[in-house]
Image 1: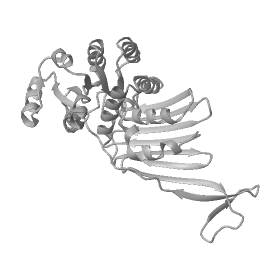
Image 2 (image 1 turned 45 degrees about the vertical axis):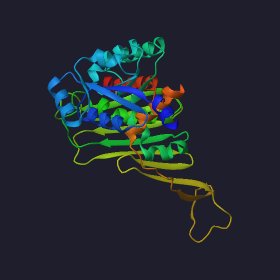
Image 3 (image 1 turned 120 degrees about the vertical axis):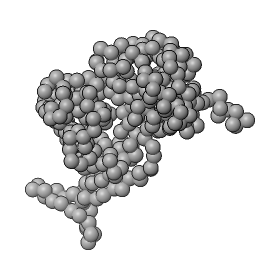
Length: 328
């Protein structure tokens, strides 16, 4: 009986796109207990048949045929095709998971918001860093940060260079920042440099929020080493998140005791106020972030709750990313 109840709640899913990331999604969805993988579509028939032969997934040579027989469409295609793929699926009443960025243009993203409401479907954007266990461990401790600094550096990889580094890499940090800063953006200043691609490979942006928070973001896809680190400074704490190594550092301050212990770290300012510095070590639970984002989307559909990264939030991240690019 329990097995039967579990089976009927599984969602039929189809994947659009069988490139590097698409194959990862296919494997995870095939292993998931919350989805039944029906098959996949790829416009490159040679690649599609190769993937089908190698892994045993069912290849559909027609996108509409696949969309018709599933509950959820997982869109892992190049950004330029996100909108058309999502539109086809949503107009057929299918829920959509869309890899970041949500679409190529803001107008397309806004149209998807309308389609989501009109067709009573749910959508989620693949901002996978929201599910990084290091970020998850400290997100609730990030409270009204006033200065944020992020570095997202990657070694050169031709994959992804069809879009500016802001849409390729920096948008991860934009989304994470928007999820913890409860304020509108007041001003954006940015610069970008094209080194090997036709679009900027290195970018820096300074976001100033209405509440006084300032965020300084740096992204590069031609670095000699990989780095994905964010630092959050707030009144009572310094919080560092290493998305790459999945480690965190939390340094907090509180009023110093009248009789500090021998090993207590106490600072005294010019006014004579004493503060004690102490460290927290949040528990970090190992996970597969891509699997988590896909399965929490299944939960949102089955329980009729709001997805963790909504299409609206994906649209806001895209909006800021495009404003950064425009300010170059």
